[in-house]
Length: 254
Image (cartoon, rainbow, N blue to C red; front, side):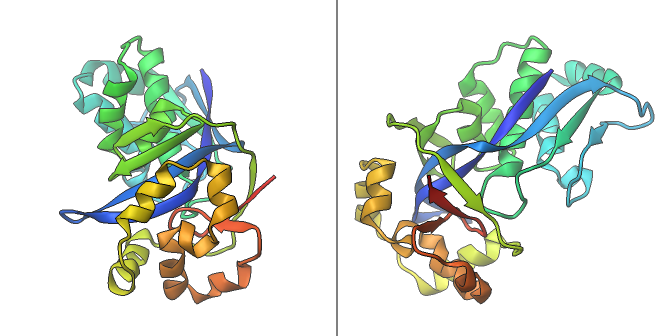
């Protein structure tokens, strides 16, 4: 079984409050159709490994969102199914989406793996049920579970509402800067204010209208905060390009 895990960009991203230690957001996510990782479920070859995960990752296996997705699926009541899967099959990943880039690569991989497990193991969970499992793995995972081309995402990422609009095509550029999301949000809390009415206004506008109406700093609350933490980002700021998530990727409408 083979599936593609597509990247996303944030057309706009507004911080609208706090929920405990988590930031609540309102954002427009769109899928990037020309940038994706590819996941393959193949027969296992390393019999001594608990979970055979093959790919180039910048973290230890237990910190990987794919491992976390496997554990979350197991904890949802499918212990025997996951144990049988791990005994016989491996997951191979061809990585193309940069890490620490604001493109959702790890979350997309995790969501795609959950969807694959659901089909491969014939569990037949609904998208809503898979989304609940995915929310335990990462804030952006539910968006990728639903697979909408465009959606308004709110809460801490668990509320995903499809937004009907013509698909946009973008190209992305990721400088060699790995943005730490926690540091970026800390800078936002210390130096910027929440604007809930503007966020709600943006949620009603099309992605094209948003890009034609607002500048890069207004669209993404985390851009200014990111530049405070990583001043070198200013060197990559260009007219017509916008900043995705907490960075460090930029995107251009094509």
